[in-house]
Length: 225
Image (cartoon, rainbow, N blue to C red; front, side):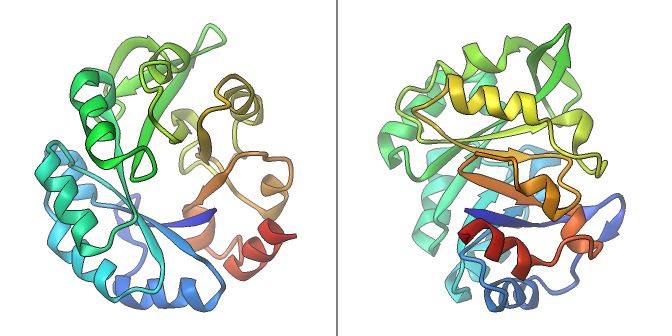
């Protein structure tokens, strides 16, 4: 899966019309789009889920949606609207029993566990609350809580939005150490050359796409080669 993130970037709007953006992604050959409800993520409750549900109903793409999910009812509403996967982030660190329940209820293919990490003394430590809090847990012992999960989104916080290239070592280690999970790479993707060494199941392309550094059609062709 090569996914494109439709989101706001550093105080400006990446796309004024998400419907047109999704149509453009589809015409470029994408099959998935990763959408973040930034308002919901900040508020820790849904803000744009009705808009996203409408996008899911009208889009040919499979949508993976993040931002503000806290309850089974919120997840069910998105899945019923046609969203393919719901992303759970901080809650997966703070309330693992609840998220384990989500996995049992909806299945491992419908939930993506998203873990944002800082590299501390060479180890990936998970951050929460929009990167403002440190959980005290590593990527590895947090991922170990989710044996029923199938999808893991890993973001190196220091690289996100910086266009400095992904953390190849971290992502390679995640693929090796977590073989039961389909790992998605996030953070730092700046060029097509950054995609070639990755062996992850998916890549989130955000800022580089919106700034024209990567042509989505070329990225999709590379993924399928």
